[in-house]
Amino acid sequence: MIKVPIELRVARAQAAGQHADQVATQGELTSSIAFVTMAENGMIDDVTATENIDTFAPWVVGVNATVGQLRTYGGETEGSAKKLYRCVQAHTTQADWTPDVSPSLWVEVGDPSVEYPAWSQPVGAHDAYDKGAKTTHNDKKWVSDVDGNVWEPGVYGWTEVADE
Image (cartoon, rainbow, N blue to C red):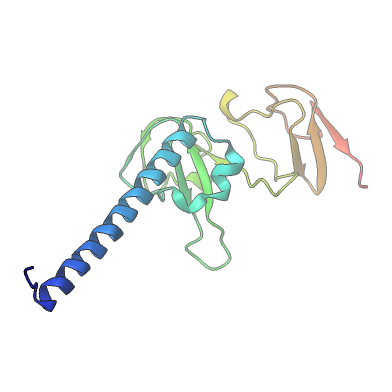
């Protein structure tokens, strides 16, 4: 039997441990990539995507954004929350086209815990409200009466929900 010096045995053990850590990290990375890809292709619902918001890359300036990509934005300053946004029009990101102010480029993937999210003026078919969609506008709750609803609640196509 050949005696292996203790230093060599320790070095081998450390290398094996590092390899195991690398394999685990690679596995986690592969899982994250698969999750994001599935979410961007509509194979994972928005609720599950929002619950795993930290899996998605942050929005940055100077990147070619493609339709369907999901990016996070916000949360860097006190009092602001990180939100998930879906690209609805291909473009190169610019400092003045942030997701929170560019509804023709990005739509927020809603917070599933909010039953009546704040109303936002749709800019096209991609973000029009479906029949049965719920929203809050002017301190009132509304439900859409029609598919493809782009009207402001209280003007047309909405029914006000009485307080319970």
